Image (tube, rainbow, N blue to C red):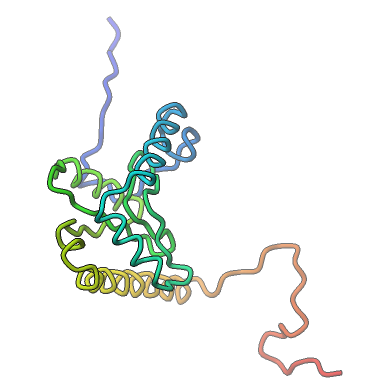
Length: 183
């Protein structure tokens, strides 16, 4: 008699690496049909936003975040995030009253495994006072920026600066610390 193979899943506490990028579903293991349905749902949510989403989107539009801007109802994997800043790796989730908290915690954990931190804020707080709701968001953005900078500096100290791409000639003023070529 042959031995049957069974699916063995690792214990989530033992896995400390981010999941590997798959070839299907634009980098995630999601069928194209499901991914298209998720994107269609995100489009619907952008067109039919709640009052809290509209208020926060208007406040983000008035602010100049530079390259750290937030996009709304963005698809990451199989999740639709309310607002996300990809360079910061920060997502803002607006908690509505009728939301499933267990599902939200699971989604937050899976997003954390790929480097996106989720900051949750209640919709009632946004509707009561948008400016007061922005203070913890700014604090989360600053904390995330400091984490990214610390990681970047640690990487540079360990591996040096980023090497040049092969095949590119150095710029004229790139003399590796020597005097500039004067004409």
